[in-house]
Image (cartoon, rainbow, N blue to C red):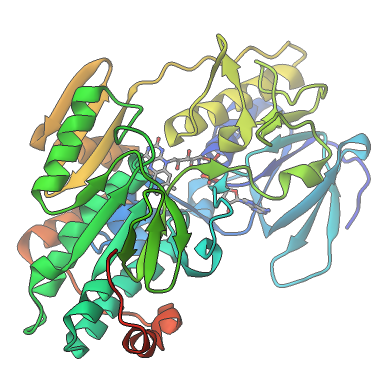
Length: 441
Ligand SMILES: Cc1cc2nc3c(=O)[nH]c(=O)nc-3n(C[C@H](O)[C@H](O)[C@H](O)COP(=O)(O)OP(=O)(O)OC[C@H]3O[C@@H](n4cnc5c(N)ncnc54)[C@H](O)[C@@H]3O)c2cc1C
């Protein structure tokens, strides 16, 4: 590929998630009168609408309806499928491997926007990498749903109560938004699904939420955290506070209290980490490994490199900006305006962010929310949660599909079929469990 500088200026966006896709969309609008080549490089031709990932993992939504096609979202931008592997800011170029090839390709840019998101933080807990599950992609969501159904099938096939207890026990580590939403929805999903099995009692399905802090949903007011905990416990979820997991095994998880829970599925939702490719970009990183940015969204020390979304460490008034979709979307739109300013000879403006609030769904048509300073809980918060995110989902056709999924869900039970795409991890589980009967200690 030609690495020579080209005219009109080429803007390359790395990552087409919330920040990158909204940046490209705003650039298409802002640069209508300015000639520029907009490139977007991502591994996928879609971005995940994360607020709906838990619903897609528990069958309330068809998984395809929880993603947005980048090609239909954008018009003028050239989407290149591939994996970004490095950059050389001194030579103004990036390197990526295009989809379907292992050969690295170098491309020159005039402006680079890094929007590569984050990954789940997986600490060095023994057994976590081999046996733990996570929820950070559509594939993770489908895998989790498959796993749950597989566990129900295996439990149904086993007559041993101790084996069934381990198979039907799901441990979620991390009591922030993702962990709480997942634990709440999973509890409902499992118990509903268990009704389909003649020999299973839905009360055999257990979900335990493990949180290191002294309350769940620490970003919300204590009253809302307490409401969420009470609601979850009322429905049968066990919430363990001041606790974390110290070892994850195939049939159990050990807690920091020394207790061992017999549970075949542990889902790690505790924290995020920078994407592994960031250190290969030749850009300054702050102490946690995220890109060190100036208030105007430029990477510190660079005139033509910008960073937005989860991978960028921005501080406004001494406070680190949250890693949320809400911030990523506004980061993306603002950097597009800044690029327009720079390309038309004006200085960029600092990014300001006021958090509009947070919402967390708890399952069973309840949620907690704090929006524009107003606290809400229960059905009203849940209704607000669904309405807000439905209207934030881009495109009327997608909104309609989601509304139809929800309406169908009101009238008919969810489908509980295992697609078998990720079932291999459970293939010999019954043998393991019968060799070494699991116990809670
Ligand atoms: C389960 C879950 C639920 C959430 N719910 C909410 C919510 O309700 N509200 C909220 O505000 N926030 C929520 N969040 C957080 C929110 O989704 C993120 O903060 C947001 O997605 C960040 O946007 P981003 O563009 O920085 O990253 P992403 O949206 O993750 O996009 C990063 C993109 O970069 C691509 N990429 C990464 N590495 C490479 C590479 N090497 N090569 C090519 N492409 C690459 C990825 O494919 C991806 O498309 C949730 C997160 C999760 C995991």
